[in-house]
Image (cartoon, rainbow, N blue to C red; front, side, top):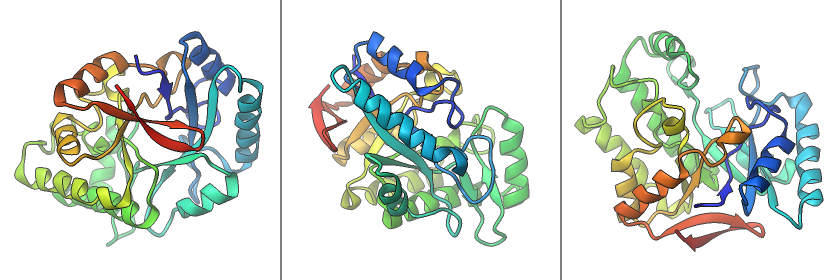
Length: 280
């Protein structure tokens, strides 16, 4: 089984337990490494983000654990940084200010550039997704989803994150109600994203959270996008997006089987300050 996880949320943001609990569980499962990636702050309050007042404590905690357990497990420091045009701080600023080992770039809030309203696409409350779609995009799902993928393209071009988090998470609360991933316009959007990745050397995360939390029947990204990643030779890593200690290896076994069936033979892991390719 894949023995690392680089997308982990503790109670410094929207996770359930202190970092030490995840470290202890990772050691129990014989992990080689674990990376913490709290949601970086934006210039407004939201329940899922780490507060600016807590960042210093978070950084100190992860660095202290890294030193304490250095002979047992590798512990890395990261942030999952939201890219929101005209609102979010640059990824370079976060890297340099907090000494991050790597960055995860994700979209949870889609900004309509015409009215500056934000659509929150994540969370367990589907009503927030539905209401946000109406308020920010007047219910125009094609415009909203197109804006989501355009925002990802901007993030790749402008911020060059080490890892692109849950690439197609826009589908999670859709539940096949507003659009189908088989529609031609949607396929064109996802294909366009893939074409823009190689030159920026980003790694695409295969996020298992939707599977083990039963919020969908596919990974993020789904199988069609995974096939595109494979044919375009784009590097991937597996992460569970854990919010509880017992989730750090959620759905890893079945995900590895699927990736092998597609044809993947390599996966990326973080080691000694760099991403390296290893056999599955």
